Amino acid sequence: MPSLDPRIARAEPELWNQPQRPLEPLEHWPTYEVFVQRTRGSHAQHVGSLHAPDPDMALVLAKEQYARRSQCVALWVVPTEAILWTSPNDEDLFQPATDKSYREPQGYLNTRERLEKFRDRLQPLSP
Image 1 (cartoon, rainbow, N blue to C red):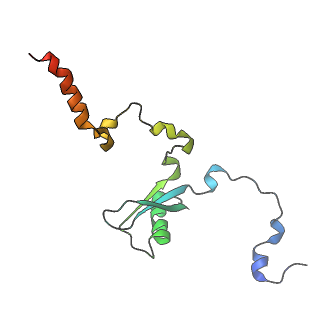
Image 2: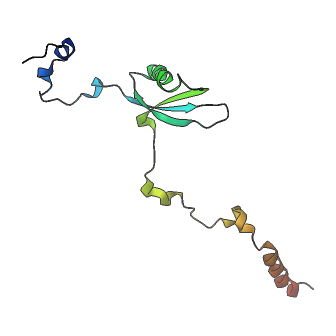
Image 3: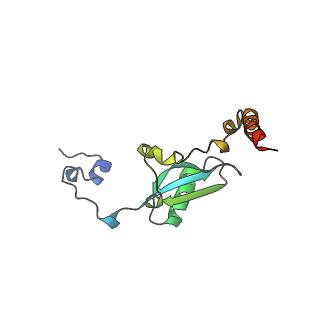
């Protein structure tokens, strides 16, 4: 028996069980990532993503969704396909190739002892 509710009738429930075809490339809007800077001098934070037909509309939608109720000084929208990232499995990419402990504070530990050893080695060479 069909529903008498006009909202259900408008939704055409008889079409719900029909097989869906995949969307064509231009049948859906591209995804944009949204970054918000809450105060001057603070870092931009990724707050979410949205779908929009173009970058200008993405900015309008991002303002409405992510900056309407809270303070915001800057808003960025970036196409998702423009963002490159590394996998957590690639953490060895960030390991230094050589020992550069001299650039770290702990690289200066025992500096006095090393300097004295160096002077002791130079003592026999001096006249």
